[in-house]
Length: 255
Length: 261
Image (cartoon, rainbow over all chains, first blue to last red; front, top):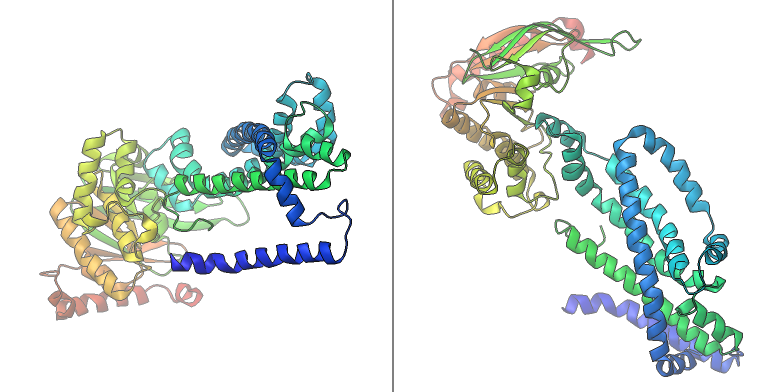
């Protein structure tokens, strides 16, 4: 317990000092609030708007979660297929790279026009696409890195390709899969928020940030940014927790 | 019927290419039921290749490999042998017990029987109380014992081992040697054991098969015939006589191959 406190103390102290420095910089430097509001002003707004921040975070969080799960599932299945059939693997990696290079900023307005304005589908699609690449690539790498001893052993057990994939390849790829998921979890929230900047249904954090900024309510915009930050952090931490539960043989949380 | 029968086996790697290697040239070897045979020789002599041929992990170029009266491929599919390597090769995401259960699982044996058999094998290698641990929590010697328990789990009539104690310290190695001998005696398992160590080969084996490199072939077979195999045997004159005999047989290999190793 004392060790946990000892390890948590330095970053906590640093965070408090940074906030105090920020506050002093804004107050003493008479920085205009539209350039940078003071943390105290943002905090006041956050407390005042907590209901709205919570609702918007729930809406964005739901989109991010659905996109994350959907994108990750498709990525894992695609990686399994690409790992199983060598030819497919060789074709799929450049395609996945093209997919990844696709800027979601360019994609979001187009997708928004493809669906009704009350639909959440475009935002979820954008999230799913963003999530796909890191999960696919990391999982595929994990699936390909099979210990040659394991390979020979499974051959002596006369195991079929499918048994081998499920009992050896997939569990062996889990550490890589979760590396991809960890990256994807934060990306999912960013994608779900940013996608709202380009129209579509306006009930999430992204639209709240743009509308607050449009009304020059900068501390309020920042309060929603803090909400987005906390949402991203929550996604990341939950992913870490799932990782821990899925791989009980790993002693440390981050290997 | 013998446990293993190898008849005029030739193994060529990369056949027909510029980097073609004659790994084994005209090898004949018979391992009797319940017999413990060691393969020893300089690196590159093809002893591991020979073991992999018996295990049907690689095919012979010409010649036949028969395990328990069946072609090697059929024997593999029927899991007629257990295999252990220098690396324990445990599955880190499975507990010790479930690692030992894996070959049984793939044979379609029911949960209760699997569990009972795994516990029995773990008790045999002295790791009963570590059944619930993950491999990462065990020492190298313990992991190797789990690998041996796993190789024994299907109660195979034949055990194939490729330097299973190679990565262990001397004390652990000697203890595991004694354990292996008592297990083989108890279960009546035939064993083919690849090793670099002369004393290990002599202590464990009924017969030591000496091989030489380039091309890999059998140059001598030495019957050991120690009266007993306990700690006293390691100090006995008969033990040292056999060691000298094996060493001579190894030296007798053509000078050219010694110079390149």
